[in-house]
Amino acid sequence: MSKNYDYEKIEKNARLKDRIRNGAVYSVLIFWALVVLFPFYWMVLTSFKSYSSYNSEYVPKFYAANPTLQNYIDAFTAVPLAKYVLNTVIFTVCTTALMLLVIILAAFAFARLDFPGKNAVFTFFLALMMIPGELVIITNFVTITDLGLRNTFTGLILPSVVSVFYIYLLKENFSQIPDELYKAAKVDGTSDFRYLYRVVLPICQPTLVTVTILKVIECWNSYVWPRLITDDPAYFLVSNGIQEIRENGFGRENIPAMMAAVVVISVPLILLFLLNRKKIMSGVSRGGLKG
Image (cartoon, rainbow, N blue to C red; front, top):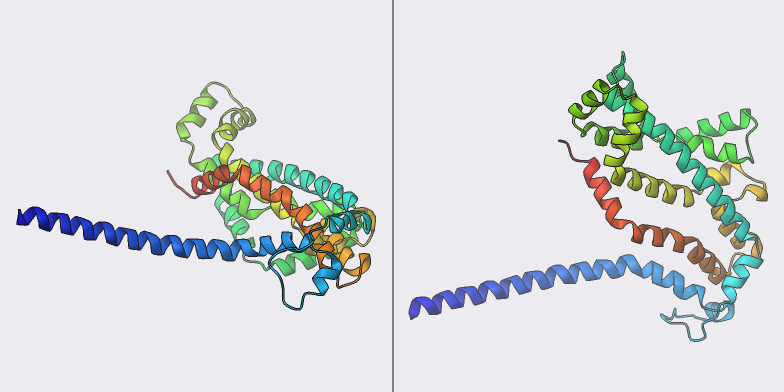
């Protein structure tokens, strides 16, 4: 009887400790979730506040007393925001498509083909990741300017069609495919391009989806390069549009209109990530595993 009582007491204490530990873990996670999500909440909240009510709040309010959609109307009428969104879509789609073509072929060459100096070239590629981004921007700016490609989509797109990190990620992913498949395909007379299209790409689809989504997000959020290489409104992206709202649309104090524009621009990316979050996690984790 005593032993049973001791076992029950130990089990009860263990359950209590588990509850306390789980409660502490969930409390920390909830706290950090609130910290991360609060800026998004504040952005959306501010976008529904009128210009006058926002500026009259000496103490910020965590609710909108009189919500309005006028800020969203102003965001599209003060500047051609729809045109900037279209330019961003063109820039994002073209850049992502060209980058996928380049990195897939490069990664396949490094992973499967044998050619003199392959390891040395790949090491040189990895070494390029050590170069600060600012130096690359300066070099790209001088090159694009000398070629007369400023204020063109070509000038916007060309510097972003190669990514050493994505080549490395895909190369590691391609290398996980058994060599037997490649040898069997060559015995059957399959060309390298057909093997890449029929075997490699379907197997590595999660990683390709991950790279595509990450590149889309990178292009959509691009700010420094578009601001540097374009001064013609016909080629402005959404990053330029937000800055133009801030500087020219209403003056530097109309934060609600800026927040409305940011909400409009952010929603597609948030939906894209939420709809593909499992594929992104699967692709990143798969690309980091060997064997």
